[in-house]
Length: 237
Length: 237
DNA sequence: AGTCACTTAATAGTAATACAAATAGCTTGA
DNA sequence: TCAAGCTATTTGTATTACTATTAAGTGACT
Image (cartoon, rainbow over the protein chains, first blue to last red):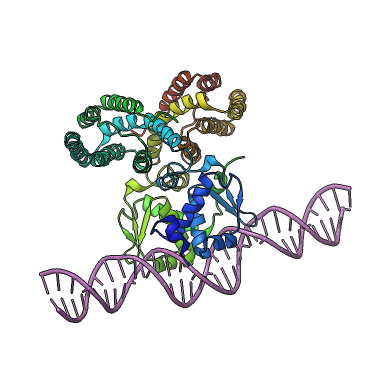
């Protein structure tokens, strides 16, 4: 039954997630338009060669991310783009490779510009002792890697560093952004041509300010880091 | 008038959503702890008096919002809080009335402080003609209401105004925040004691700057508006 | 002719059951 | 002692049947 898919989706994840991913990509790529009614359940069951149960779970998944909307007698409709929850790591992951990746990355950098300096400031004020220890360990690792350079390990540590900042804000709304950041790192930045310099100096400034509890300095240091990575942006081809 | 929100907020949701809501509230309130294994499907089916189908759909819904994680033979586990997607309107809605609402509101205001000025700046640069027309209509309505004051209609228009700003940024990551904002308005601010003044002056400044395409002015005007509403915060001390 | 209540048909929602797949923990044998 | 394999348990998938909702079409009544 589940033959055609294992090769296409490539994942060993559950069936309904694979189906959801396929449909999501059709929607995100514009292959099925906003506000369009998608085929009824039975038809899709046939197309994807899965049971109604799995198909329904797939549709429910997409509904919960704001991509679909079902009503009896009318069918399942693609919602308008304003309702798509782009701040969802799974959705972001599905976005990989479709549409203009540079545009997504640019949008993300814009969001990061607005949020990360403030996140660093909040972390300076609110990070718990445990979080400071984790941050400290991660920075020391970065420091070490920056000397014996290894791109892969650097990227990993860099991601962890910024992730910890978001987690240390003590603000519930900043938490999910940690995952969003990680997804962007893995799905987009990794594939892009940005092979950044290490920026260990800027990172040290942020790190020190957070450890010292100096919110303003942390904010400022993060602004400088971001302005530096902005100069490394891939020229929009 | 618009999005799929009214329905979600309303009462007669489908069964699996009701179940999901119940479970979500147990998780969010801490009644079931992080990393705890919740009872097996059959047991929950008995507790909620629903079929396994509905229960599973509920669990899937919560899984997609990062609250649960299922594995064969081990069961379904509550994830750690870092994975909960607080930037999801439905989840936010479930948060209503549990825990410390003021804390949620404070966290949200912090996020708004970081994002909204930048959103206004982006809107000034990127709003489409159609979006400018909508914004214009909404502001005129606000202006009218501020003269013949009507709290309910003011709140509605105010919300729509800020919603439109997020939608006009042309940045995918800002889109979901429009819905988050609306949910906060409806679920929290409405219940709180904050009955703000109209701030028509500050709103006019933002409106004018956006229409004029002056990003810096729009950002600055929004900062001023937020600093004003900060002074109206319910003092929790 | 218009409008309103009613019926119809199409679609998603819910239920119940059976079986498949995965895996933590035990069991067995070298 | 350890590793390979077995077993029991739990989630995953499939199938079928029935219910609820509602857009649209029908017809009686004004």
